Length: 155
Image (tube, rainbow, N blue to C red; front, side, top):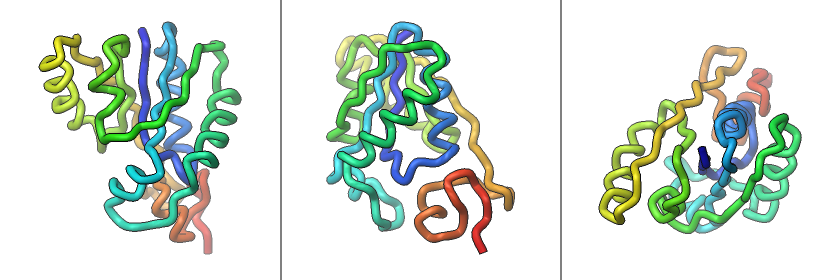
């Protein structure tokens, strides 16, 4: 199975690592990591916040994937220029790793794939990773100084 995972991934945290681990575990035919372009990263923020550059995020994600990849998967890091881009345009992808928050988007992605004559994607849902305070780890909380990348509460 060829698996994709997409996101901004900046700053990187344990929730992202869970997504990567799921992609690597199931991606025996390869993994595509789609990183939002700098422009898309800004456009898709629910709340404005600083986002590391694509170059910096690519370096960080590449290093993290290498550290997590106990299966020696073929991993390709690509730039995502539109919201559903790679998932709807790449016929060789079989599954998409999503969080519980983004799982509902799979239906719209599969509708677009069917319109193009592609097979629908399977969804692989990686569970949320929670911080020490019981709230979900997020990049927004890290940037705000509430928690660190591992979910430890900062005082």
